[in-house]
Amino acid sequence: MWWSTVVRVWFWPNTQMDDYTRNLIMETVGVGIENISYIGAKFYNQEKRNLTSHFNTPAWIGVAQMWFMVISSMGCVFGFGALCYLRLAKQLSIASNAANNLQVQLFYALVMQTAIPLFLMHMPITVYFLCPMLDLDFDFASSFVASTIALYPAIDPLPNILIIKNYRNATIQLFRSLLCRPKNKYRTNQTSTIHNNGPRSFSQTIN
Image (tube, rainbow, N blue to C red; front, side):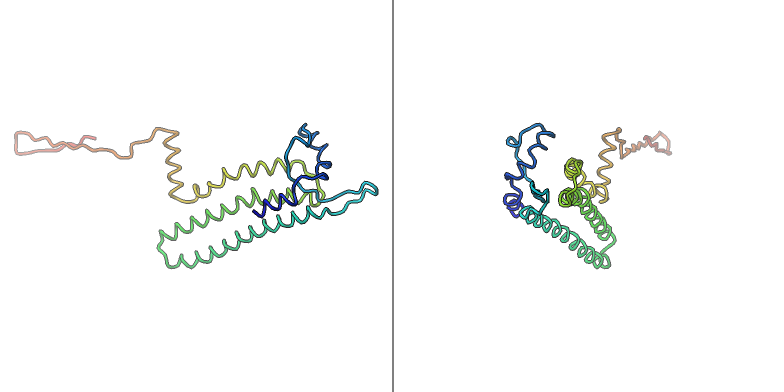
């Protein structure tokens, strides 16, 4: 709700943004600004008389709230991650080896699931918003951020699959069954005993 309010109040299209992006949209997309929907922030307004720039206050108010959301979110991630590590270190000394092994695997999976959105979402978004704030123009930033965000949902489950032993073994077994003919795990040994007419008897094992 907070993010929606920030977008609606501070990043909503307006006359200044339409004039600023009209030619750019027409050159890159080939569509008039009246025929698209967008959100954005113009951090600097340029005076036509003396060609000086000054801060666009609404845009900076909105982006300050966005920065607070991102920083507070990452603070919670690292803070609770540290608390989880401390609690885990205490439990490992009193739990069994099997429980310890599982807890360590879950902790490493949690660390990886924290690092993935950090590198694929938070850091690209930071660069994406930091460049226009510093009045820098990087055209590749938008496509790069879109690619990393699209890649995030596909990579996010991989730490659990690769780090947790039971999931890893099940995945390996699944690929083995799909790529090659599965071997029969159990071999049946049939034993038959043949008696002759004499007092002696013998048995023969047939595999």
